[in-house]
Image (cartoon, rainbow, N blue to C red; front, side, top):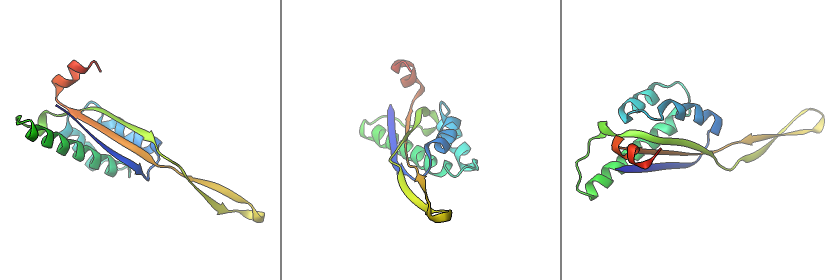
Length: 123
């Protein structure tokens, strides 16, 4: 069983979010949860929320299909960060100039599933 969760327009730069997502890709969800809880990066909080949401989505999917559900069997099959829209702001600088500040956003996606799903999907 495969379940997906997405957080869009998260106010963290994609580069920083990718550093955190790389830590959990391919891991067991309980291990990934522990890694994210103790990771010092600020981006680990929204990634943790997306992971927990994906696990909850898998639980709901299993309940609807009347299947047995064990959270410990789930694996992070795919986790990636796409770039969202950039908010452009301006800061005053010396001699009447203005410099642009880019406030970047991210779209964080996490897909969890059982290990037998990974074998069949060809990833």
